[in-house]
Structures are given as structure tokens and as C-alpha cells.
Image 1 (cartoon, each protein chain N blue to C red):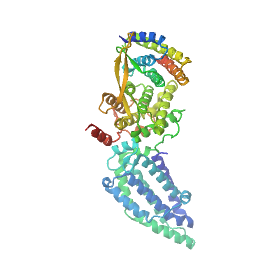
Image 2 (cartoon, each protein chain N blue to C red):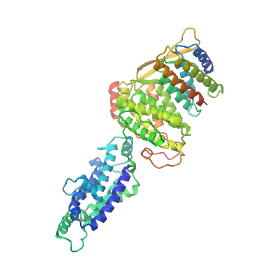
Image 3 (tube, each protein chain N blue to C red):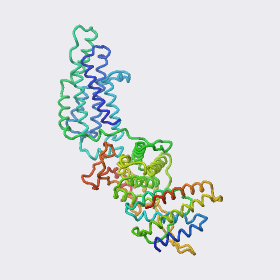
Image 4 (tube, helix red, strand yellow):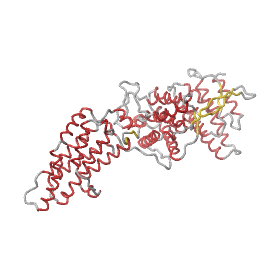
Length: 430
Length: 124
């Protein structure tokens, strides 16, 4: 479930909680209420801290809202999972917690963990439009507190009256303090920014540690490709020649499903450039990834006669990220001497009119022509999108990157920060 | 030597190549039109099959035939590439049937023959 859907579900649960807060006279529910509302306030605070990871870059309103949410939450109490599950308020807090975990899978402590995370960090300034959703949910939660503060019908048992009074005492500061004003300010600031692409984030997929999964449908294949390109982005130090070779061929196979010559040419150039690249075979998880890419390539070729273009759209959307991940990881692999490149050396066999060349392999150099050609081809493939395709529902891969305004213009794919690998390169060539 | 002559000579060589030494050179020659195409000639799918076949034949010597670039506008080029590819598939079948070879290598040759045959069917 995506971050956006989780937030929507949480809002729905807060709506149910408001109705329950206004009516309940159950002393057990009322006794638990302060703990549960505190739990949800803390979840909202966590979201704001995640969405504005750098405190020095945090907008003033968000900074003040974090403090106000902390005050509204009150003291921290442990709350059991069964108590949370029994109440709409607790379940809403759990949904918020899961949504925060989805976000952390892509951006942790302000650092991108996936290409989508990098695109989000690159696209936004100090704060994200997703703050709008959290500010609105803060207002929803204040509405729950206000509902709780409403008087209970007369004639209640003394126990009900006392636990209700305690719950109201815990909720009152949130309804009368600056929290609502700050949340409304944040809604006003981010309301015009439109929906955030953060809403499209889903849990980052993992590659199977044991064996390459088989693809049956294009949805399977898209999920496997998503897992593979996320792995490549996260593990540049494990890139091997097999990933480059098979990745470029997979890109070419998928490109042939689209009637767009620049895409085919870019991936064709990349596949041709990888013919001059070799190296040690990948091991462990890296081997599974290579096998998965190979299996996806075979599936694509086998599907060419059966699938129409729309079936392949979700896969093709991921090609810029695949190319970008391969290109970004290449310097790291070259610097660890895991990539070899070939130079053809001429020889003429006796008695044959045909002149032959044999490959002589040597460790790749980042400044060498072979690697430069390969990087150029991959970088070009990372900037191409297919124009004029019928619109399909947005996917994280498609939405995470800024697309160009006109057909064939180059889109901007996210780049893994190259500071570390470039610094290493400079050291090697000093 | 131009591409057409090289393809013709290679087909002749394959007929006498019981050791498989000319196999990957022939594959490389069959891939040459794709490498010089600009992504719009329909060579790509056949190339993907041939590249897969090349991976399977890692145990055979890798060589490249030195010749001029193929003229993709010449209608004889796809014909020559098709002839070369079909000859290569028959050659791989023969290698797969050679009882003196390792079983694993014979299997690889049989799988590569299948790939090359599919490539021949998908040439422009």
C-alpha cells in the first residue's frame, strides 16, 4: 500500500474515532483514550520530522508545529498493540506508523535510499508538499479531541464521569493552544503546491536472496525490475560486468517494444558498448540480481509477440532509472578493478583470406574510451522517455522524475551523488 | 574485404570447422549489422538472441572478423546475414552432436543453436 493510501486510510479512521469520541461512555475506552491520542500525535510529529529531515532547513511553521505536537502528545506511555487494534484511533496511529516506515525505506535521516528518494530530495526545497497531508490530519486529530471534550449525557456513573474528566484534561491543551493555528498555516502554505509524489511511494522491494524469480505477467516483471534496479542503486559496490551486459540487453529488449527509435538506439548503443566489458562473475545476492535481469530479458523477448505496448508501459517507465543506476554504479566498480575492457589485436591466420582480431583484456580505467562510451550511452538512455503514449495511472517510477514538456525532449533522471566515487577516482589518478 | 565477402568466406570456413574455432567469429560477424544500425532497422531482437548465444558459447575462442562495415542500405546485407545465421545454426547443431565433446558443451551448443535459429527467423 502506498504512503498516500495509508494516509487516506488513517484519515478515515480518525473520522471514525471522532464519532466514537463524541459518543462513548465506556469507561474502558475513555481510560485508554489519553494514551491512544498521545500515540497518534507522536506519529504525526514523526512524519513532520521525516518530511523536513534537516532541522536547520525546516520551515519556521513546521518547527513550531513539531513543538506544538509534542506538547499536545503529553507524556509518553506504552500502548499495547491489542489496545491500538481495538480502537479506530489506535488503528489510525498504526496506519501513520506504517506510512512513516514506507517513507523511511526511501529516505532515511535526509539521505536517499532509492532513486525515488533521490528524486524527492532533488525536487523539493526545505519542505515537502506532503506536509499538507500531515497538517490536515493534525486538524482531524484536533477535531477528535474536541469531540471528546463534549459533555456526556447526564446521569452517567461516577466512574465514567471521572475517566471522561481525565481524558478531557489531557485533550484540552490541543484544542485551545496554538496547534490548530499552526496546522492551518501549514495547510495554507502547502495547499497550493498540488499532490506530493511522496504519496506514490510504496515499500521498496527486495530481491529474493535465493533464486531469480520467474515472471509470468507484466506486473510480475515490473515488480522484479523494480526490485532489481533499486538493488543496483543501493549496492553500487557490488556491480559487476554481468549486470552491465544483461541490464543493457534488458533495456534494449524493452526498448524494442516501443515504436520510438531514439530509445532503441540509446539502449542499442549501451548493449554494444557492454560487448567490450567483462569481469568477475557476481556472487551471492549480486548473482541472483544478474540472473533476475537475464530472466527478465528472456521473458521480454518471449513476450514480444504476445504483449501490446501498454502491457510493457510499467516496465519501460523504469528504464531511465535502470540506466541511471548502472551508470552511477560504474565508477565504483571500475575503481575496485572489477571491470575489464578489451582491445582487439589483429592476427591473420595462415592460409585464410580472413583477418581476425582477438580480444586482449585489461583492467578498465575510468578515463578510458570504453568506459566513457558505455557511460555516455547509459546516461543518454537515462534521459529518454517515450512520447505520445496513452496515459496510464501514475507510478512512482514515472512520477519520481521530472518529465520534459515536449515529445523527445530529455527528462531529468535522478543521479546518485558521485562525490565519493569521484573523490576516489581523483585519488587514484593523482 | 567487404561484409558480403566476409560472410561468404565465413560460411565456407564453418563447413570445415569441426573444432568450433570459427563459431564465435561467425556470431560476431552476424552481429555486425546490428552494431552499425541506428536502432530502426529491426536488427535488435535478432541481435539479442545472438548475444545470448554468444554467452552460452563462452568456452569457444572469441575472435572478430576484420572487414568493412556492412552497407545496411544494400538489400544483399540482410540476405547475407540470414544465410550466415542459418549456416551458423547448422554448425552449432553439428557441434552439439559431436560425441567427443563434453556433455555440458554439447548442451550449450544445442541451446545456442536454438537461439541462433530464432535470430534467423527475426532478421529484417
